[in-house]
Image 1 (cartoon, one colour):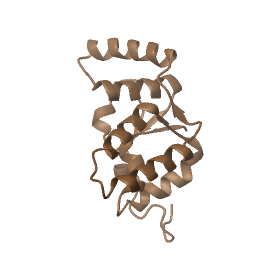
Image 2 (cartoon, one colour):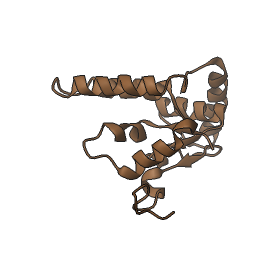
Image 3 (tube, rainbow, N blue to C red):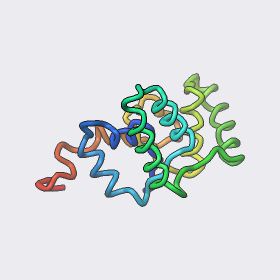
Image 4 (spheres, helix red, strand yellow):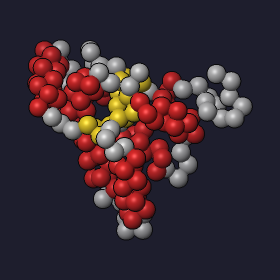
Length: 149
């Protein structure tokens, strides 16, 4: 399976006390993980809201992240745009709107047949989208040395 990582999952690595299950899962799945340029934009905007003490470290983290994801950050291409237009029509008919940013992320996942990895699953649970919530679906102790899975 291939994954599209949402901002909350990527942010775990920047937290002072990250969820070890998420970090272990990301390490195990790293070759199958991609993200959207929209997610990178969201993270870049978030970093710029932080105070002057934290901002340099977070900018360095974001730079390391984008370097590590090199070649796996998917842009909003013409193909994604067409997928977005069809998705927008479908969601309007279902009266199931999404924010513009989330709809771009969802269209990227649809276009590339990726499962969205997010703790914000309610924002993405729509027909035709596959969502995995590692915060809720990974078992306690996942990835720890004594975990038996």
